[in-house]
Length: 308
Image (cartoon, rainbow, N blue to C red):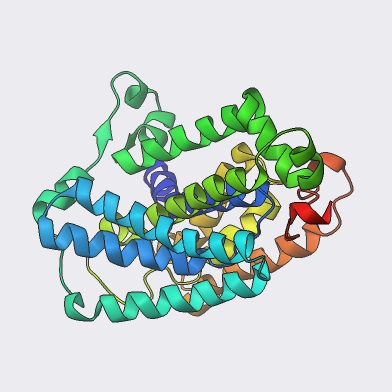
């Protein structure tokens, strides 16, 4: 059973990066529906960089750069030009998927070099990995997973314990009031949208570098849309986002577990579960009444200071 839950952590890690990235973006008042495209861009650029150079560090940098550039395009259109956020995000998804298909044509079916795969082998953390049951699940993982834990902790501390985090929340809640108090609204938006995109790129890279170290089309397979829903499920809180990512990771591999137990269930039905759960979460989330569970007040609204 411990092995199954360890696999759940692995399956939920790409969702975790993408969800935290989208959470930061939405905290700035921007809803980016292009998460799927950003993950695809990160996946293909990370894979190509790793395949061509044999260097895991460059592979990660390639994924980060791809996600950051994609989100920069989105930021310019929605923040500077004040384009519709939802339409721009959907366009970014189509662009990212098309870009991944085009860029990945020459490496289709290629396998990552052993030097890259070796970087992502499991690392047992001294003492913590020896804790019964918990150690095997949480502390006998690869470096990517541990970085995910750190990202969640940093996001929580940043949003709740720092001045810049408070400023970010102010921008997302009421951009005109934040501007009037001396906060550079557009600067905060740009920075956090780009950081959010970079994290989405890393989420995609985990799929192509660790989960499936062989390039294939549609490696993200809808996880970007699940990440957007998980932000709502998590009520824009990093800790709940982590729980949600691992729960959905478990749903995605449930079929393999049932088959190993000799239980015959249609794989199509199992594959459908995460998306059914996503729809249910969105429906339930629309009924939230507590103020702390509400989305940022200025979410999806463009800001132009001359309109104040």
